Length: 408
Image 1 (cartoon, one colour):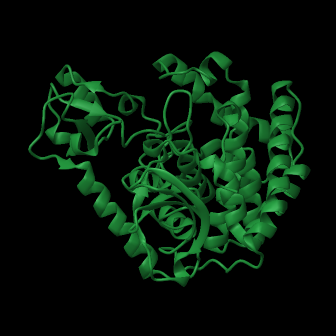
Image 2: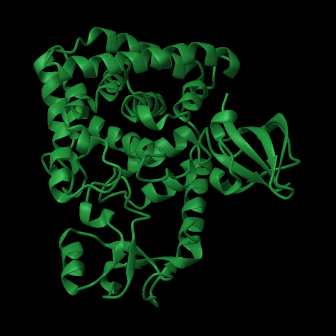
């Protein structure tokens, strides 16, 4: 495991030959030069990064030269943690309180989730065969997602954290729709816009079915040529929806623009700033969050809290600040599915956000970090007691904990 003490953030102006660049802050972003990690061998590499608009990056001082201007990752993360805490404390949540108990809503949400996975699968098979995709079943599914999220968003949020590496493409599409529902609810989007955003999110990656399996499922970094092929999926997604007919512009924009970036370094059209549709800027936030928190064949997913901290570094030049901040306020700084360590030394899984106090979620106590033993499962609502509080987020792999066993 990479030690945070060995990782430092440096400005691009301080990068020198002999330093070792690590991709800790770039995973999930579309700039291939930044996604590669390794020792800087020549000035040309540095010049290429500067030309691409890179302003900072991370180096591993254990594997390469140190830098006096470097800030340890521990300090960077501590600042982001404080920034997120200030963000959720300063602004009262706009989201409505749940109208259904978590256990009650989970039964409905599980059915919806399974139906959505099946719906996306069959739509992709139809697109692969050159057939049109009907909007009607996706509109109905969007209705179901939005209704569930308004009843209790924690139910679908829980399910979105239970993943299967072999079903990533379908699960990712469904999860992005779930997260879009939560974000749209928090933003108080009008019902029509919200439903169209969720519909578009369900189909945002449908074009990936037309990407060769050798590229789509490659267990490692893509070559430049392979990445060029992969980037076509956004255009394919947009074209499939346009060809099928009946899909509103919001859906088409989400499919075609969710990989565009504010600084113009995205794809497929290199759009900048407000030239990227608002719904696509929203989709970029939830798409990246789900992608970088997922375990894939070629990389280990970040914890939800770490993912949010990394994403804070991508605002303004990649991500829209207002939508990322809204997303953090919508899911809390300890999102459902996070593993946290309490002052008592116990570990717990976050199973529900308390909208009245996102710093004190509802937890499922499962483990004692001091004795390294599992505990009898106990549900506690931190907002209803003062005996214990969250000390930090924890990495499940550090304790060999499979969170899937404790999410439901």
